Image 1 (cartoon, rainbow, N blue to C red):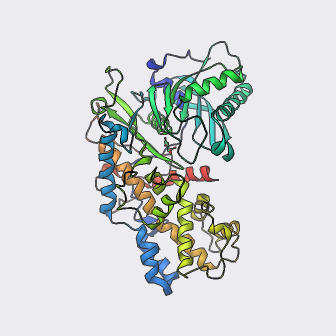
Image 2: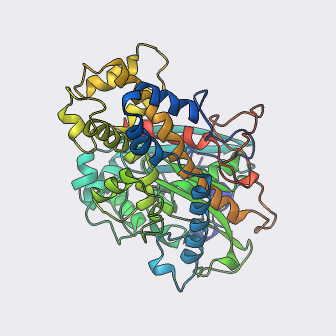
Image 3: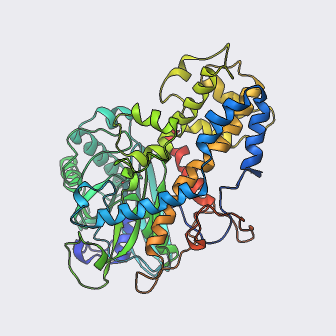
Length: 499
Ligand code: BGC
């Protein structure tokens, strides 16, 4: 039996959490080690040494062009943290909001669940290629999911129209309802729509897409209300009796589902093909808030930090590879931080480094492939494959080279690829950690009532309680340390996104 669909302004947290389903989550944890000092049991210094050992004849070039750009002083990450805090203020201030690179959208979500919620709802999630629909049942502190995954083609995402996209979503939902015998129900089924793109919110169930990210370019959706487009497609398809009561960002879904498991969860972070975070903010600090002033005096803010740096404030941090990536991307100068950190661009980063090694005559002198000359052709999934390498014969890494039509790659080339990503990964994760730390800093010190402590809400990827803290943390405040859980979650999600 389904709950009646409540009016969107009055949705309880149980309604919301049921609607958001099981969005995967990354986490921030106060315990465990920082990820910067160790990767796969080796210290970063050891990895660098190994890399230099492999390429001993060219050690000066390797240090200058390959290692140094990815090994940044601690102060740089702290400065990033500081800059994001300033950018967050700009986004929340009505005088500066319109041109703020970090938009800080108030979401109309005013509370998080406490784990005691009950109810049933549908949840639809669309974030780029991957789709998911779930029938979520909350009961006795547990969350039962009946779900189905789907996939949207590159062609539709890059060249499709609004009608084609939303018709596709409606057909996907229709198939699911049919299989569950839920077509033409007497009462409307409540649904939460997780739409993982930047949106200006008009109400809990009304959101206008400001612009596409993650290389999606479906015509006719920017500037439109996405729930209206979805409901129109349901109507056109027929037999679907659904009311969309809430539309949220994937970070908000992450926060809500995290809070259902642990009510002290305070931040939702996604580090995947796209990157973003949300957190609960005190209402009196949200100058752009135009909703009611009833308790609770707080609202979840969708930071949309992917645009951080598009005003040039991160130029000091960008290395030559970041700049190359940005210049050759579809929208140079936009989504700067997303390019510097997200899974979508990790593979290209490695390709650029390999090209550099070739240009400097260090490797690949007598073999190279068209694929390695092609932007975007070194997929991020190759890095994940190489990450799982334990075989001294480099079975996974060889498979990567074969896929790139470079079967004759030498053992040294396998080793270099293996070691290089051990140098680059901590830098990327450090960049993510600096941002997570900034958001944690913002909510630290009890800006909410009651104060929100930081929690470990990981899905198992975080450091265990028995891990020793690192001597030199990346970010100074102990409670704002992001853990390797973030890196783990990012890489895990990237696997899915880039497969
Ligand atoms: C979008 C965010 C989203 C993030 C993670 C970014 O590109 O702008 O809204 O939360 O990707 O999916």
